[in-house]
Length: 513
Image (cartoon, rainbow, N blue to C red; front, side, top):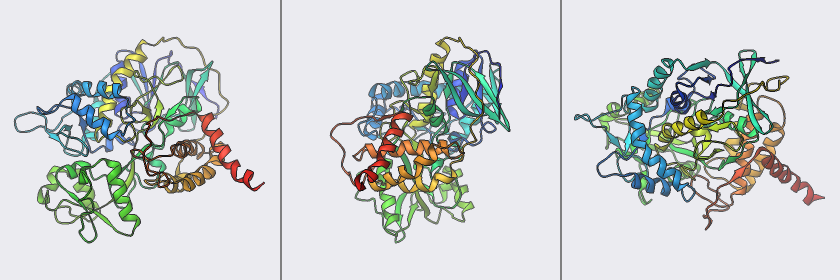
């Protein structure tokens, strides 16, 4: 389809309408901005599904320094300490801002915010809304605020397909709605498109979270960072539904335990037990399943009849599966949940391509390192969105009509690559499986089909995982089970990933010659 051209006078375009996109749009007001959402606002976003809350050092026994220390420990040597400190110091004000926008957080009888405990946190510092429906409440309040803001033009059902780059800088967005393609001329684009979980069979992410924003950035020439670090949530409800319902880690924070089918608590000798970092718990659960055991989350003693009141969304999902968590253990398994890697950005959210910013899960800010600390992701989105908006607003608004593109790429579809991705890029990896994944994905990535963009991002993740010959945080190599003495971040571009992939595939032919 030949695109039309939409005259938006160079206004910024935000791609994605989860918490990061909505907050960035609100912070840009009263500057005009266009918000592109492939679906109706509030649907098909990971933000809406978030059961966990926002981490902020609000307790009398807490401090930003303690939040910093916990985040650095979870990040396993790869966090950017300056970014972590900045986010930890800004978290309390971000909570206040959300309350001003109408978010109804859970409070105690005296009106103070109720603080929960989650894995690897040394203090109760998790702010929730609606018990285990924090994301839904945030998105509800933010959508109301966005719809009331006249400077924000909402384009629902509009999907970005490509970024136009001229002279090394962004000059427009190619988008599509229905059967019609549209070019939006702009030199300021913010990616807020979410994560990659839907590349996997087992995921807590909605169907649209398959790394499309990463593909847009990669094809525009942007550098991507730490792609190999994918967090698998250890306690997704083990049912056929996709996305898999999440059994919030806050359930473990309330004293629930993980057991096998015989009632054995297999994490009892692990430091931190069920509240160890997510990578540790996910591997332990994965190994139980790999040896033929079942795994259950048991809240019968810790919560019992109080379960449904404390965790209404989880209780509802359990009831739909025929499980009563008050009297029955809940079957769980690890599922792809959060991507620590993403578009490499600076402190203002700027990518390596002028005119392109990234915010939220699609960005790699350095906050999470090799393993995200629970409930830091929503905190990251609401804090960094302010800094991204300030940077975008300060950037020159000059623009020009971009070069016309002959056609729009097809609508991406990850379904045909999920088998390869799930087999090669799971909780435990090795060289052979990763090499096989690259060999499978490369010919798909270089075509112009619906599977090409998802295959490209999965290929880049596999290349990054092959190059990291150690185990660190969420990246575990069974052939390199120890951690290297020196922590290093990884960087890839489209071109460098393709070079590595091509060389890898040529090696067997060279050896047999």
